[in-house]
Amino acid sequence: MRLQALIADLRWKIQLFNSDIADEEQRAGVFNVSNVAYPLVAKGLRERRDNLIATIATLEAQLRKVDPLALAA
Image 1 (cartoon, one colour):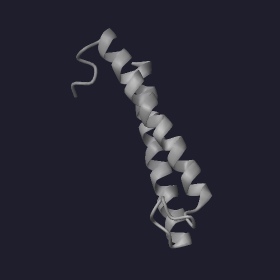
Image 2 (cartoon, helix red, strand yellow):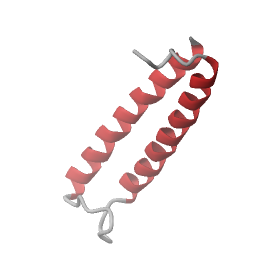
Image 3 (cartoon, one colour):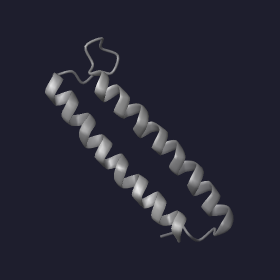
């Protein structure tokens, strides 16, 4: 149950990162990550978000081992 709560919390943080990334892109008027003018703040937020996505995948794999039905809902 604790692991599921952690995963849910991390998913919420990903949504916050996505919102912050969109705000930064909008503020800068640059949406292409490969553009040299792409905001550094948005790049950093993307890295953090991607790390959380990888963490969630790892946690879900562990949860499946412990309780295969835990993620079925």
